[in-house]
Amino acid sequence: MPKIVLDLNDRRPAWAPPDWVSSEIRQVLPDHWDLQVMATEADGSGDGAPSLSPDLLEAVRSAEVYLGYGVPAALLRAAPELRWVHSGAAGVGSSLSEEMKSSPVLFTNSKGIHGPPMGDTALAMILHFSRGLDFGIANKTRRVWNTDPYYAGDHPLTELAQITVGVFGFGGIGREVAKRARALGSEVMAYDRDPSAFGEKGRVTLGPDLDLEDPGLRLLHGEPGFRRLLSQADFLVLTAPETPETKGIINAEAMALMKPSAVLINISRGSLVVEPDLVEALKNGRLRGAGLDVFQKEPLPQEHPFWDLPNVLMTPHVSAVTRGFWRRQTDLIVENLRRYLAGDTLLNLVDREAGF
Image (tube, rainbow, N blue to C red; front, side, top):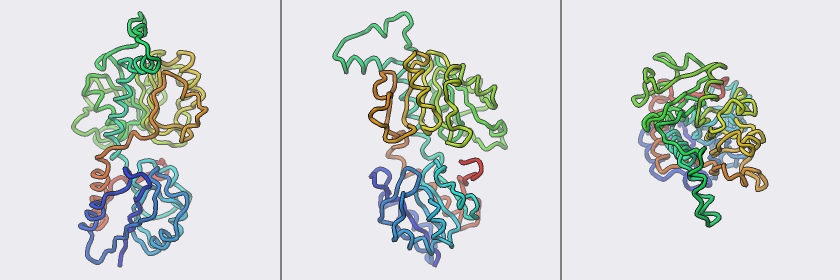
């Protein structure tokens, strides 16, 4: 009897599936298929569980399909009958072991389903700085009524229709950021490393809310495009995946090209930013501020300088959290199950060489 193992029972309630998820999955399975729902704790960070329980190892031994958060190499080694594995996270770096890279097993992920809440988070961070909410928070903390930062000759307050939002990484999350920014009147510059990603035959499908012919949406690529993105963006939003090419790409050299009035927003991976360089830029006024949801080390150490910088807005890697998560996650899993059973191409197949 073919078997699917559903291993998404994260320790955090928001990432643990409601009962209706397994019910909807069962509805699309033929009668002779078995769905085994694991009660053991999973790890929704995308890395997969740090250690695999004996129950899970036993369950996957005869499984054809594995649905989990990340796919550790040990799981692949324990499951010789696997034909398809799915990670319920967007990032796949920790799943790309040598075993995975050489495996014939189909590998999909949940890229795209996190886009709407992450796009909202980026917009919230943009508004935080564009309307000077950081000054208001500082006033409240000190119990003072200080209007000086608002009325200064060089005050940073602006309007969404007057700013340029730069988007580094134009996948599903980047497009959600761009869609929101354009809808509210901001200019958008979107960078993708691959010029062939755009257009009718490219891997980037803009959807009905974005238009390649829109003069307010400029698409950039290559080194000249990257430098232009850095130098012209008022708000630079990082949405690219972690790859060898993107690690440390926002360093002192990159920040030196940015406007002193610019704000850096990172909702992708902490490794994209060289944190000591960012601290220096924020302390010295080389940047207006930073909105950070991700960090090189998580939880962020208490002694980290970010805690003491008034021009840093931080959230603890929660930009994807939303009550709409399980509806989108389940829809993706169910659609791919239908495709798998019909022998059709799956959605969100991971490019193991590119790393996303």
